[in-house]
Length: 97
Image (tube, rainbow, N blue to C red; front, side, top):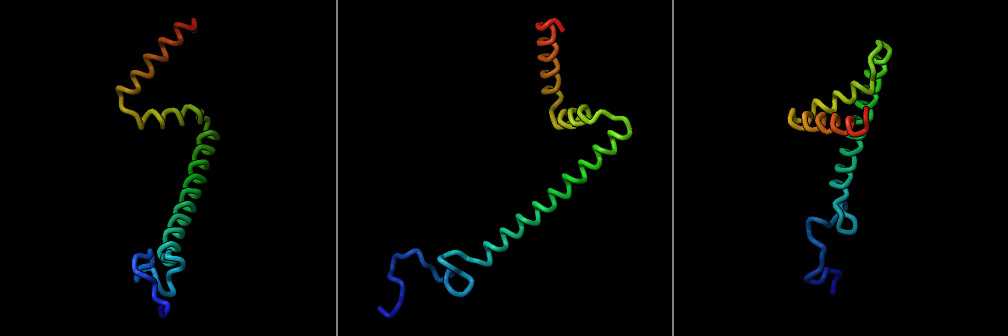
């Protein structure tokens, strides 16, 4: 019983040594976490850029709410847009608007 792991345990040769702790490959885990952190930083920077563009549009007299609606609509298929507009028109008439 010289300290060897018994057969059938979850410990593998790939998950042993200084880079592994408790069966976790620390280098791989660190790499994944750092990648997510970098992407979150990029997302924040992009979000800030988008806010700046909307602020610029607002100062130029554009309605930001309408711009955001147009951006959502441009992502949709023309048939989806037509269906939504038809339903909106139907609901408006039902409400007497």
